[in-house]
Image (cartoon, rainbow, N blue to C red; front, side, top):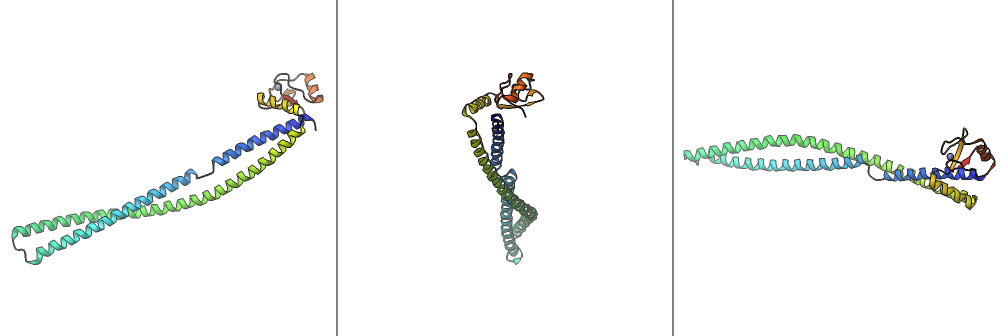
Length: 231
Ligand SMILES: [Zn+2]
């Protein structure tokens, strides 16, 4: 195998390694909770809190209703017991009974409204829990898959790096040094010759240079300085 072919293979190996490292970084950035899962968790907590508030409000209203009923019963007992005969006092009791009745009606009205809201919130709470569970399940599967993919890529990367070290060892050090220097300057050190021009800078090569590319081991492009390779 000519040294140029070895350099070309080394270069292709390096491109492959760089792409794989990029893919690993990208995959790693996707590890952890997805946006959808985070949102589902926030929603579930929100609905749960809302439902608790409503349930607590409902209990308050029940207590208020019981207290008002007890007071009203008390007032009515006095009112119809026959013990109170003073007309002014009777009128006062009647007014108090009316007031308590009005309050009780208002509490009942709010209780009905809160019960309706509680029912809706309870449905939404169940739905949000369901969504959260689905997101958690799919996230678990996705994360597991992603970790396996990363594991596979790391394994492949290890093999490529091993191969790279092996190939580097097969190339004379001074050639490797030259290759590294061009790579630092140009990014890509070995350029394929295609239709008579340098694949790196696209400049047409002279007939004599094309001849040398075929016959001499390390011919460099007269324009960009890259090592030329021709099939
Ligand atoms: Zn060139």
